[in-house]
Image (cartoon, rainbow, N blue to C red; front, side):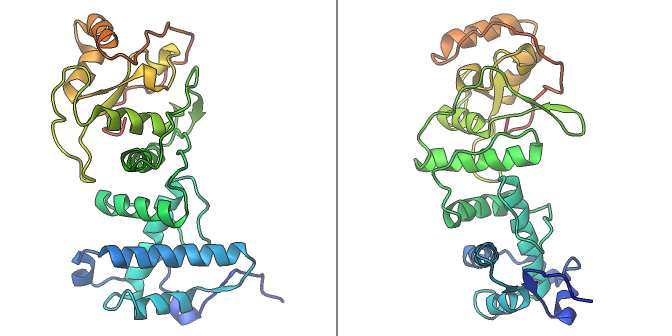
Length: 281
């Protein structure tokens, strides 16, 4: 019987470690350099482009090539694990993933930030806005990517306004969020709460000030997911908007204070999980 075509060629005894990446504990605890990460991202993209061009890719040969050059001192298992991490970030950004590497979570915030920047550069997507999503992990990665683009000046157009946020059913109903809105609002705030003018309470692992985004007209009330309906708030103000005895007055005062905000009228909407306490929202 003919063997079905696979874009990968792989030696059985070597590829048997795929999915069972055994990494020495001392090696695992050693931080990856930017050059090591970049070598893996470049290898991932080179194999992907080759497959898209109809070429047959020898995954093992590529791995051994990278291990013999940029990753000297790293194991094959460590390389495979890192490639699976790259697949996770690629998938979270809404890009096609490379066959043969199942996305693997627990990448780490600092490594994710570096991988996002490298992927945007190597995929030549530094000027492209991010795609809206209802998935929290995808949203967090796309916000991080868009914020980097706004900060670098490579993304200069304001997020496109939608009249009402879409809805998607995942494990339950969630609103489809625009990561470009979240990124622009937090970047534009400059690390300061737009409601009370106090600095962000701390810095995230990826180096960004910790601020949350609040919709002054909630999405559940038909408010748009747009920069004229979103304010960057410290955690205290965010909870005041939701739970304060003066929440209505505080909302009106903030709309008056922040020039771009519009007091959108309520519209019919669905009651969903709308409490956005995560720092990327």
